[in-house]
Length: 316
Image (cartoon, rainbow, N blue to C red; front, side, top):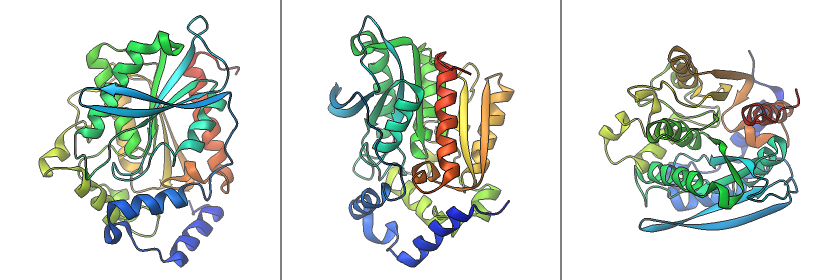
């Protein structure tokens, strides 16, 4: 298929902007540039009943998690919840850059969303982000009732590197005996070497260039040995049997699309219920382009529908 015409315009604008690439400006300036650009093509913030930041004390650190509540909830009337991890190559991104997407998911799926401000590289290299994800999973499982969360209806999700953390968290949850109802994986990174056909075909010119991907991983990984750790590359996990059912939203013109399809196939082979949707004409990060790209709004609606079905609240 061809690029979506609206996506073509985004790529044209990106090329004309001639902004210095992240590897040239370093992590701090890259974060600022991404934060400035993140909301440019996104939807307007969806109003919710309550949005607040919580401070969660963990061993040796305190993390911020942003709670999104579409309506009032209490321990007496608990709601389903999505534990969400933002994208950004483990190096950029924040709960602020993904605020609008989390609002859409909370409102559209009628669930609580907890967006984790996990530690970033290079200040905090692997496995810091994975450790934060696993500890926050334990936190929401442990504190569910006090948060007004239904402990039997918890999902994990994320986009890009956040999708990596969500997939790894689903494996960890299985190993820890934590029952999740779903893993929502939005163009996740899942492979160890970035050597698939899509990585080669789409190495440059589709927003997420190969040199930027490798720069992200040079910030995050301590050595090449870390690439073979399933906490970085869930495709390397010895087994994915009995993990939570998965919904994958992939983009046709995304270097990561092949590893997403490979993971979906591996889950299916292991007997895990899985739905993988490849959105034609789309590129990496398109979920955050829904203010301009019509098909991105449809993908957001699909993700919300998948969550509703997993939570048992779908009206279909």
